[in-house]
Amino acid sequence: MSAIVITGAGSGLGRALALQYSKDFNEIILIGRNHERLQQTKDILQQNRELEVFTYTVNVQNQNEVESLCTSLFTKHDAGALINNAGVGHFGPVTSLSGDKISEMLDTNVKGTIFLSQAFIKEFQKKGKGKILNIISTAGLRGKVNESVYVASKFAVRGFTESLVKELGGTDITIAGAYMGGMDTPFWDNNDHIKDKSRLKSPEDIAEKIYSLDDGRAEIIVE
Image (cartoon, rainbow, N blue to C red):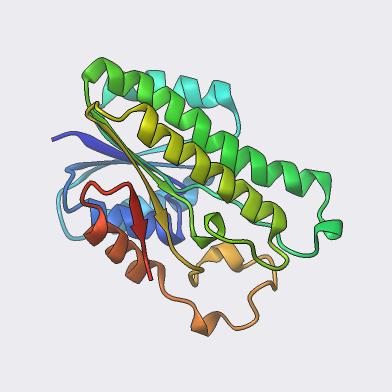
C-alpha cells in the first residue's frame, strides 16, 4: 500500500487528517516546520496500532527545500497521495498588514501549495497515478471582513486547484479541494480575530467529514 504525505501535520487539522487517513494507508509521512510537534503527531498515530510514520522538517515556502524533499521522499517511499494542509493567516484591516505578513501568507498558502503540487505531479506522472487534496477553507469561496489577504491567498489556491482538475482530467491523477469553516486549533492562538472560539468546530470533526466525503469528487464542502 502506498504512503500518504500530509503538510502542516504538527497540530490541528493536519494531525486530525493524519489520524483519519491512517485507516487507508500503512505509511504516513508528516511534513511541517516544527520537529517536536511532528514527533507528537507521530507518537499519537502509533499509540494504538503498528503504523510506519516518518517526519520531515521542511519550509514549504522554499522551492529548493521542497524539491530536495521530494527527491529524497520518492527514493525512500511509495508516496501515492498528498494533502496540502500547511497554511498561515494574519488578520485585521488591510491597512494594518505589514509586508512581511502579506508575504508569509502568500508564500505559504499559495507558493507552498504550488511548489509541492508541482513536485508531486511530476512523480505521479512517472507512476501513472496519484492524488492531491488541497485544504482551502470557505475563505476560498467568499470575501470576509478583516481577512482580505488571507482570502486572496485562498482564492488563488482555489483557482489553482480547479485548473489542475481540468489540466489533469482524463488521467489517473486526481485533484480535489476541501472547503470548511474555522476550527478550534492553534491556528488562532496568536491573534484575536475570533472572539469566541467555543463556536468553532473541532479539527477532529472536520477531518472526519473531509475523510468521509473524499470519494473522488473535485470539491469537498464541509457544512
